[in-house]
Image (cartoon, rainbow, N blue to C red; front, side):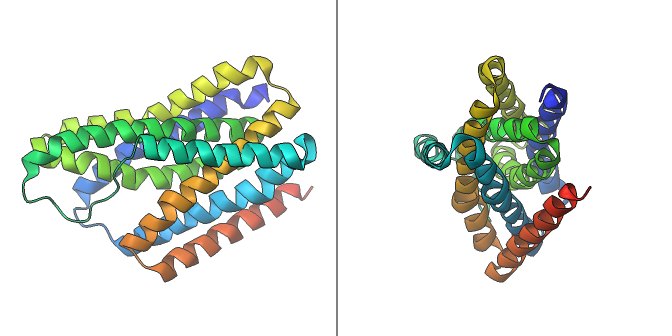
Length: 252
């Protein structure tokens, strides 16, 4: 596990920086193709759901047992549910507010909300990567895809309110940097005590976090701003890619 430590931190850093990429895309491409967004978010959901159930939860069950795996899975879901209600954050708005000056406060609150929501996502990427770096890479990619529209949602209202493009990109990027911070916190808290059982229990918790993110954020956003058929196609593609990838990983 220790040999994956640096790679786990690097993957969370790359995933978190995707919010900054999202803010840049919002200026380079003023009207992004929502069909592509729908397909991409569906694909990210397929990757995360497949890995959460087929690999993380099943692997956790083999070591921690079904009862403990179920307990930690539902704990992960409930933690994200409580966090989502305690610190709500906005998504892509689709239309500009006619009174942009009123967006300043909401843009700051959105950045804070996204930053807090990124903490458990960083923990998830780090723990999965620590367990198996081959799984950490697609999960980090899926989280990065998820972070791009969040970066757009974070930077556009601030830019509209202040007309300061550089600062809006900086705020969006800073919100994403809590993702590697979450990874560092997870490793500091768990790494000294980490054994196979604790890691397996943590992965069951992570699988609950990942499934909630897909159900609560990725799939609804993809359906709202794109096409349900494209979203479903993306989910199926995510399933297929991870299914083939996991099979190839087991081939000697």
